[in-house]
Length: 251
Image (tube, rainbow, N blue to C red; front, side, top):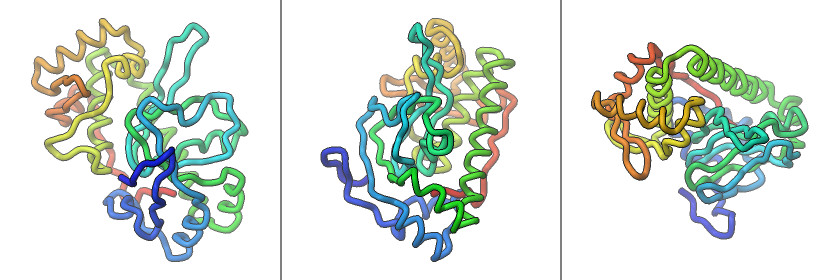
């Protein structure tokens, strides 16, 4: 991770971006790399719990997660929170606000974050001059829609046990693809409240459900998060299969 100082980091050159070494991501052409390097205006660091984007706000920036975890959410007037999805390295934050004028959800740092910062006003330039990168942005938006479809299916039709199994398997598999956890090691930095707010369950029901998974030796709940012992076993309970995205784009 880059060094932290007053909300900024020592800028990582796009040519030396660590994400380019991750297997899921496609390679840039020299012209694309030059454009993205010029498109990027800097880097931002935030602490865990910091709000990155606020629902209803007009953000001047678009972000790519360089390191760390984030989550997208909406809050009802009575304070109830629905977590929509989780962001990891390579994920784009703020695209909705860039295209629709204002954010329809908020984004919070789940762990300390390092973000690549891009000017929202230059997104049109990307579409005008870089058709392949424009396609990549469209692909990223479509993939996010597909993930949300699966999340909605889970909340709407899966049992509580299946929902929890799906969520933990999804997070483990996605985190593994970007080296946030190892094949047989690593902790998902979530609390049981995060799980409850994602699955639409009470915290009591969530706790009972997670204990059932722990009793099957599929997970081990720790003070700092959840250790997934058997992601394939969780996926089997949820009747879900992780689709590996080869040559996945990122900006």
